[in-house]
Each structure stands twice: as structure tokens, then as C-alpha cells.
Length: 217
Image (tube, rainbow, N blue to C red; front, top):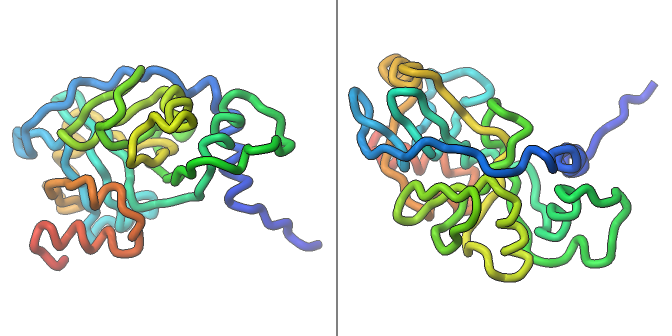
């Protein structure tokens, strides 16, 4: 009996179809401004070292959304899943029919990304700061995160951010967990730039993140 193959794009579109109620305002703690060993990493990049063999995180680059004494949360920026049009995403999130509607495939396209293994039914929009709306968390001078689907409505009206991707799930750590993993040399942190976070050169992103630190691990 032949094994049936599933199209990755259809698999993720089917997932999105079931997620409409899970896209909404999400309370994110205020971003801190310190760095590790008593300092916080919000707004920086967390880069997996070769010592980190967990397949969920191996060779990942994570943009840190928040980090404080209560824990940390970030989004993987180098695990793309598929591309989808804004109209298609809106139709899925609003409970549209599976059959195609005229114009559903048209309009601006958004990269869908694996954001991490935690909250795999949560959607997070990482984007440039030229958009602020409901559920928006400003992280740096250039990068914000929004967890509300109104951002898709803005994009459909050509009123959304210039740079954006949609992350499915996130990476999260409990109190002290990330600090311990960094001391164990599973991660290194580097200062972020919006170009590295949003560009489409996925294959080189992990090495380029290490190059920002000036280390060849």
C-alpha cells in the first residue's frame, strides 16, 4: 500500500484554518534592556551553538522578544515553512471555506515561519516598527511583535508594516533556564539588526549570526 504524501503548504494551511480563535491579544511582559549574567536579552539574537543537538533548536537563530527574572520568550527566524497571501491567511483565520475564492491567492505574500515548539497553536507576527496596532509589543527601535490578526487587515489595505513574517509557535524558558543553557554553552547572544531578522537568505543566517559575534564555533 502506497503511503500518501502530504503537501507541506496544505498541511500548514489546514493548521491555520483551525487557529482563528487562538489569534488575539497576548499579554507580553515589558521588554527589559540588560544582558545575560544578571543582564537581559530582549531585542538580541540567541544563536544555537554546535553543542546544541536538540533537533527543535539545532542551528537556529532566535529573536528575543522578552527576557526577565520570570523567564524568556523568542521567535526562531530561520525555519521557514511556506509562503501565503494575506488574503488567503485572512480567509483561513476568519473560518472561510476550503474551496478557493476569487482573489484569495492574490495580494501581498507573507512568509510563514516555525517560531518554536511552545504554544504551537499560537500565531505571532514579527515586523518592522512602521505598524502599531492592537496586540503590538515594541521590542527594539526597529522591530515589534503583534499577536492580533488585525495586522493582516492592515496589510490587505496596504497599510501594514513593510517587513513582516508570521511565526507559528515560539521558544520559551522558565526562570533561570535560559541563563543555565547559556552557561552550558548551548547558546550565544549577539546584537540584532532588522536586516538579519527579516531577510530571505535563510541558508546563511545561522553562520552570519555567528559572524556578528566574531566567532567561528
